[in-house]
Length: 316
Length: 308
View 1: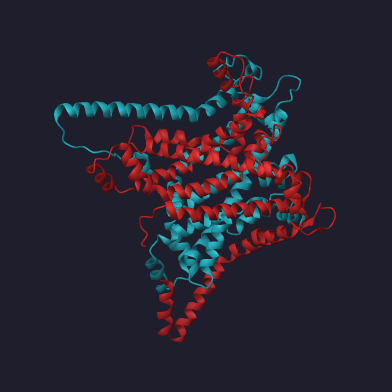
View 2: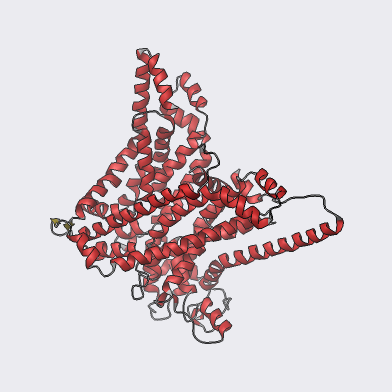
């Protein structure tokens, strides 16, 4: 549209119109200026720097020393926490994201049924999402307390035995604890609100047509709701996965990556190398690998999305 | 508006004319179905609210009561003095003020500049605009660790460490890609005829922005402000890395510090009850803010998701 306007504008343009267009462009750049500076100073510049640093050894005290690919080779071959932390992070994301998407969709469908008190239910579902992660980690640490926490008390009461998980203190259970905590915050959060709006955007005619064809509740859900919601599901999935792969504060505060590295997420690995060992070059290399992985993963999702996401407004 | 629609929900279902007995069984089925839905909704609410309730109850117990076995639901005598005690044991008042200052100033900068940048993306034609917009959106994917290390080095070099500048100043450069996107989407929904009419009447670009677009964008601006404030209030990594002095901590860093020392019993008892009170005090302002801005917020969140 804009190109067409531009060409027609130019073809019958006296000089004053061209200068008008130039003025518009200059004004546009001026309003953009803060962000252009921000991009350069706080994103592009730092990215270049960390790209360079990833090929160096740098301990802050001495000047960076160029070492070529040594950091990367060391990461892939010698770093005993690299692969485990990367796999662990993916495992976490691949559990949390599908579960919270299904949970959020179920919650949205439930809250779309015109129940009395829906406003209250929605608020109750949403409040966990508002809790600061730091506060959530602190309070779940208390709820999961192995000795006097309520969860273990119930587990002991129900099973009648004294065995109960150690949660954040138990390598076998710490991850489960973090996943429960994440789901608590995610199911009723923004994902659910976006699904709710998506549900309300599904045209009633489609449901009516399905009923005429003899569709029951499940068939309507499966053949109308889900296909119409695929763009929303996709949006929530991409954002959810990026967010889950970046998990840091929750684990840092609730478990500090432990016990026995059971929750040593990738972001914790980078943080430790950078700000506890002050290996800035090595940590930059780790960060760039992470960026690359995220990028590829997101790209693949966009490619795959063409097969299953249906855009109602799209013209082939 | 969208908030109302979501709040009221929508009746889905068909009301046909059916033979009497079939109709009766259908109503019965429907009624029992709805009863089940209510049960699920109430059960879900209980699950989601339980951690809050437990935290609040814990915050009103004595330190010793917290470690009683088996655990009890209600405090024997509610210890409301736990809350003021947090202010004595750690510098909670200072931390709260620090959080207010940091979140307040960075929200102001972020929303103002994101609106300007969103205006530029929404209303002006210039070479490179679309590619810059795509770059802007793709920065949302960037892991913070990629830029954090150079920023740390840069801020230490210019002696900004242990000050609020690294937390506030970057916000004045467009805020974030998400905010810019939000503002742009909203501006694009305002008819451009309004701008043009004002331009013909001789208004400059800045005046169009300030006197035409911004007054129409109060809901989305409020959404942007509340979302940014919440994110800043909750932010942990940046303040944790850039602040060293205890007195300069924000609440998120402070509560983590408190958590680390709460387990050590001083002369009397461990302080987990106070830690719970602190969690409540950190969360409460956010929840109050949500209630005040609820309808704007829901609308904004939904808009960012749907028109993506």
